[in-house]
Image (cartoon, rainbow, N blue to C red; front, side, top):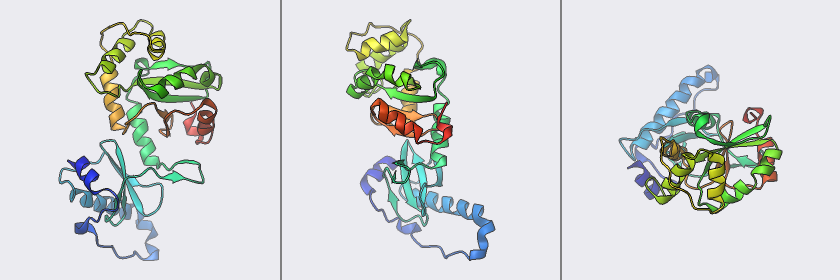
Length: 259
């Protein structure tokens, strides 16, 4: 499995079969940039296949910093040098922008996944004329998820709509999972979610529900903890943030993050 190979080899990994540097292109070759980029992607793909012949990335594209390609596989974001030699798994921080360094390709990948989740399947707490909308993968047992839910009124006053998606941390089939199904199957899902996050017993309910689908998509996004907060443009804002910090983080994003 590629995931096992990553765990065993992470850090600075020499992919010896693809480690040769390619010659520098002449300065006049500017017009050939798109073809060169495709060649780099191919080189990176071939290098990663040395770790796992069955390697199938969800995305390969330019990293948010020079000299690297960004690779998404099974929800993990990896960085590979353009020569295909070194592989790293990290969360690079953009000092100038005061946030996680994120490429347009990664944002588009996340948006595409999030857009597959129907609005009707989300539990939404929104003010009139919201300026920002955040998608929050949540768990009813998670302490910081409960803390964020206590901030809902203030977030709404700040013009932030919160759209909840289910991510039972204990996995499919757990009590956490069945309780979240009960919440999503309630006649008043907002009241049921608020009660569950307040520590009240969750009455058992069943129905056709999106909990497993939302959980699986969260895994595709690489979520391994809750709350996991995403802006409308696909930016991941991290876990719990106090309302003022969350608003400031949204204000620092491009206008595309507002909706």
